[in-house]
Length: 509
Ligand code: XMP
Image 1: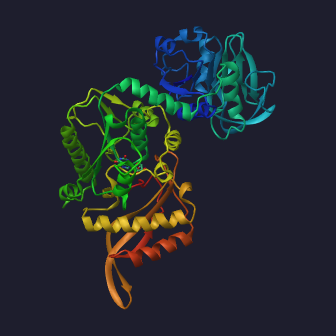
Image 2: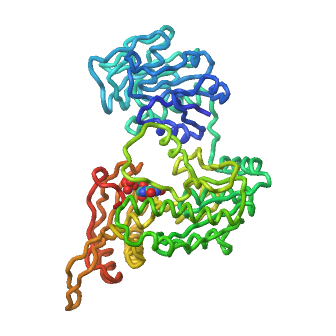
Image 3: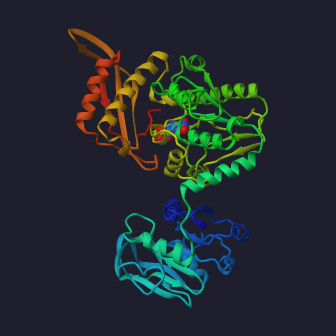
C-alpha cells in the first residue's frame, strides 16, 4: 500500500484516488502520523501532499527527518517537494514569479518519473515558493522558464519530487508520473481490486464477529445498504437491521427498502421495519423553525432506534456506514455550523454494544457503489442520490404535515421520472422537488385557485460543498411542470431554483 501524508493541501483525497485508480491501495494519514506508526504500517511508498505553509516560515510544520531513513521511496508534491528539498539540504525560497494554472514544463525522459512522458507537457502549478536549488545527489528532471526545479529525483535513495500537481485533471500526463512512482519506484503490482476487497472484508468481518450479535441502522441510502449487505454475507442471521420509517422518505421508498431487505428480499438477515410516521408527524406539528425541525427528527430517530434495540437486548457490534471522506473530513479543520446535519444511523447513547464495525471506512463513494454492485445490490439502489437524514422535512419549508409530505412526494416522483426518462439523471449531482410555503393565485378550468408552489432544484457538484444550478433542458422542466400541476392536488405553480451553493444550500432548510 501507499501512505499519503496529508499536509493540508486541497488535493489530498485526489492523490489517494489516483493511486487507487492504478489498483494500488492508498491510505491518507495526517502529517503527525509518527515514524513508529509508519514502520508498523510498512507502506511500499509515501507521498507528501501539498499544503498551505512555507517550509521556512514560522508556521513550518513539524516533521520527523527519520522518515527519509526508512528506506521507503518518497514522492513529494508541491509543498511536499519543498519539504523534501529543505530537509535534505536544498534551498527553498519565495519565487520571484508565482505560477498558477496550466503550465508547460520541460521533462527529462531519462528519469524514472518522466520516462513515458512527452518532453514538453502541461502540468498544473500552484505555488509561491519554489526550490531554487536541489539537494546534493538529486538530479533536476523538469523545469519551466521561471521554475528551475519543477521536478527532481534521487532514484538511488528513492526520493522524488514535483513542484506541480500530477494528481489534478489539468495535468495532462500527470497519471503517468504517479504510475511511474507507484509501480516503478515503489514496485507496487496494482492488484488491488474491488472483488478482492469485498471478499477479504467479508472474511475479516467473519473472524472479528465470531458468533456475536450485530445490529445495524438501515436507512436505505447507499452507504448503509452496502454496509448491511456486506455484513449479511459475512454473518447472516446474526445481523439484525432496524429500518426506521419516519414518514419523511420519498414516495414508496419505505416499501422499496423492505422489498430488498425484508423477508421477501434477497438477503440473509433479520429485518425490522419500524413504522414511526405518526410519532414524527406529531412531534413536528406546529414547528416551523428549520433547526428545531432537524433537532426533533434527529433526537426522535435515535429514541425510536434505541427502543427497538432494547427489545433485541445486548449486542456485540453496531454497524456504521461511515465512508472514507467522512473520516478524513471530520479529522481536519472546523467550520461554522450552517445546519446541523444528521445521519440516520448516528451513534445512539443507550444501545448496549461492545464495539463498532465500519466495513466501508476505507472506501470513497464511487468505490462504495462498486462494492454494492459486486455484492449484487440493484442498480437503482446503488446509484441513488444522496438523501438527507431528516428527509423531506428539509424540503418542506415551514411546518411539516402529512398532507404536505404527500404533495412533495408526488411532485418529486414525477420530476425524478421525467429526468430519468430524459436520460440525464446520472449527469446531475442531486435533483428533487421542494414544497415552498407560498400559495398564489392561479386559474384552472374556469376557476380561481389558491394553491402551493413547488420548487424544482437540480445541481451539479462533485463534493456537495459547492454546487451550481444545472441547466436542465427546457422540455424536461416543461413536461415535469405540466404533469405536476395536473396530477398533484393543491399545486398550481412550479418554479425552478437557479441558485448555486453558495449562496444557497442544496436543501431548502
Ligand atoms: P446542504 O443543504 O447543506 O446539503 O447544501 C449538502 C448535502 O448534504 C445533504 N444533507 C444531509 N445529509 N443529513 C445527511 O445525511 C443531513 O441532515 C443533511 N442535510 C443535508 C444534502 O442532501 C446534500 O447532498
